[in-house]
Amino acid sequence: MIIQSLCRYYDILAEDEDAAISRPGYSSGKISFALVLSREGELSYIADLRSDDKKPRPRVMDVPLQPTRTSGIAPYVLCDNARYIFGVEKIKRSEFENKFLKISQKDEPFNCKILAESETEVVLVHQRSRDCFEAFKARQHEVFDFLDDSGIWALFKFLDAWNPENFNKHPKIVEYMNELLNGGNCVFECEGTLLHKKPSVMKAWEQYYFNNEDDDTFTAQCLVTGELDTVARIHQYPIKNVVGAQMSGASLVSFNDDSFCSYGKKQSFNAPVGELSVFKYTTALNYLLSHPEYRMQIADTTVIFWAETSGTACEEIVNFFFDPHEGVAESNGEIPSDPVRKENWLKIEQMRDILDKVRKGQKIHTEDIGANPETNFYMLGLSPNNARLAVRFWHVDSFGNFIVRAARHHLDMEIVRDDYDPRYVSLYRLLKETVAKSSDNEAASPLLGGLVMRSILTGTPYPVQMYSAILNRTKVERSINSIRAGFIKAYLLRLARAGLTNLREDMINVSLNVENSNVAYRLGRLFAVLEKAQAETNREMKSTINSKYFASASTTPAVVFPVLLKLAQHHIAKSEWGFKISQGIEETLEGVDEFPAYLSLEEQGMFMLGYYHQRKAFFKKRDEIARESE
Image 1 (spheres, one colour):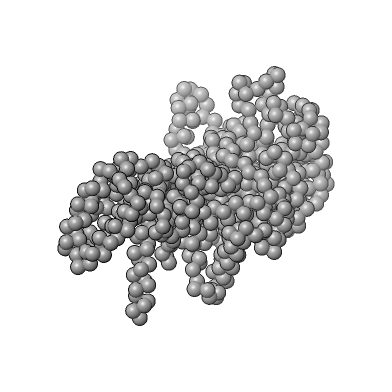
Image 2: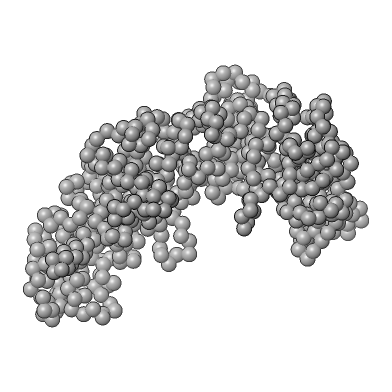
């Protein structure tokens, strides 16, 4: 299903003129330099194709297909690095001493030539680098020998005449020697045209690519198309840009152990997928991973999403739903003049309108989201696993349903907040609330990201692991903010909605509900009242009831609250407004016949919700009093 969906999306992208996606036989390559050749095969100069940034970045362009390169020698066509094009390599001095000096001490010939060296690195030509160069030269001849093209003939003249030992003597190469040896890829240019972009060269390459079948071919029914096709023995096009995976790329489908195989079949013949389907799904996947508008990061999981339509309207909305720009959430109703802030402000307004519709139970239309709500929408979570990728989650739905569920998540998270608190919380910010502020590692547990995302996508209760992590962090740090309170409220709300608790939905509110008779909720409010009484009596106390009793009050109230109520009598006696404190205690204790010996996890959440609501109500009253006095 995943591969089929990616293949269908490749076909959509291939018909979209604005989507620069590789055709069969080509792949995206990161190119640093163009080696400009004269018609006589001389290296005229080297063109730097990298960006002008402080840290130059290679240019991405389509080049003849570059499959995964393992330990063997495997030259590419018309695009490669210095080891293959020039037969020269730069290695660390320690590696050089281990590989070459020790061998020479065993009376074996010192079969390498040092071109340059420093305290840490050595530039040299040795047998393997020579073999790489010879393989590269042979590869170009193999593909283009029959082609009558002046640029290709110039390339042949250059390669046939090249001596790797002259590398550091060439005046044009010396200028970029370090950059070339650092692994940047090079292409060739002649008479003002890049060779791999010349129509005649492309035609010759495509004829070679499609007619050159591997001897080890296997024909079977393709799992993607259902038709008989040449099955790929290995899915040799690496998937790149998955955070944490190998820089050279990783595989989504691979068999590397005999225990995974059956019926005597080798490697990916056990899951037969045609060569063209492999190319399509890997190309589409790399395209999605290389474009930020289709991608986001949740803990260690790289998430990509796409709709079966051209353009990026759907993806932009989704990106904003999960990563809203919190800084522009409040603008006092005025449209910002800065273009970027204005665009973000408009998206926030669009998001608010969608949430209002979902809150009222109204249907989402095309004009609300800028796309057909019935469009198929996909979300795929990938995490690294050495040279392979693990699928964290896979979700398929219509785009309209997806937006409704994402909106429901934000509605469930709604909570009374201060003006500087974010109106809509990103998933990254939510997960970060589970990490200790003093911890050096700011990453949340990899497990939580996938579990929370799955709950959002399916509209089911949130994972208890995330809920427990939020509760524990609140108890340890003895503080609760709008994000933690919002998630506790959302967790309890979904639990009540699913009928998995004795709590009712009307007991879980956005702001303070003085009518709520839930004992845990009232005890949370009582704790806030007692804390306020202490603070008003003595503002300079270093040890407060919050710092000493918050964790135990939220778990074992019967042990703590009798002590706190007795302590409160001292505060009441000293306070000028003691009678108001007494009224507050009596009000919050209404309906509480006895203090429970122990609060369950759900009751602990209600306790913290009551505590948070009551504290916010204190500040709200102050604001109202201040406004009335003006």
